[in-house]
Amino acid sequence: YFEVRRRKYRFRILCAAPARFLDLQFSNSMEFVVIANDGNLLPVPTTAVRHMMGPAERVDVVVDFSKLPASTTAIYIVNRADQPDGRGPRDTPLPLSRSPKLIMFKILPGAVEDPSRVPSVLRPQDPISAADIRNAVRRTWRFDRSNGAWTVNGNLFDPTRVDARVVQGRPEIWTISTSGGWWHPIHFHVEEGRILSVNGGEEGDTALLGRKDVFPLHGGDEMEVFVKFRDWIGKYPMHCHNSSHEDHAMMVRFDVVAPG
Picture 1 (spheres, rainbow, N blue to C red):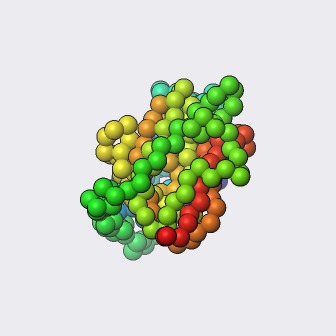
Picture 2: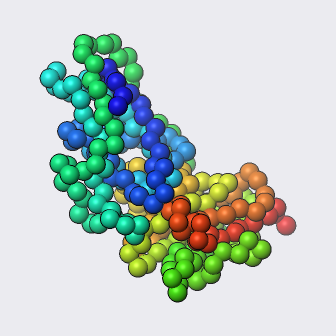
Picture 3: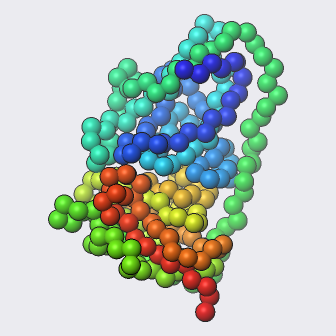
């Protein structure tokens, strides 16, 4: 449990589960404000009642406990994702009454001063230029299952094989996809990307806007991600962050190389 006063708190939440997705909600269905994702503030805050996150994803939320009725002494964060196995959650969430309780917040009595505010603008994002989209190197990565083994583009991981040579500073668009109903939280190292589209449409979930390094693929999803590898050259992995999938070779190696 965690004791809170009747004021705003900022919490950073990490989904540290090996394979479980979280569909987070307060037991009283109270609203909260999402202000940041994996590594960055969002362009603008967004109000939510539920938030879905997969292994290795992070989220920053602001919760205002002063809005609770005076009679409330405790509330819970619960997980509404109905996930009986590693494949991923079912389409229908669990009822609140059956959702596992993750943490209890004990509401301390008495009013307190709270000068904190959530700004209306957090971290504006420059638009991706038409030239970067036009000149981007396009790559396709399919996270799948072949003969009982986890694969990317039909291949098991080989640390000696270079699956992509990426030129430092050159724009890239990576299309990542999955099939068979399995959910895969895809993570690439050393840089963050921006989601261009999910299943052919513009990304409408504000919590997924801005820069991210974990990209949650639900069963059958296809996602376009824009990225520039800016700072370092070297050998890096991209992998599914479901620990069992990652440990069993659902990974690729890409090398960031200097221009020329």
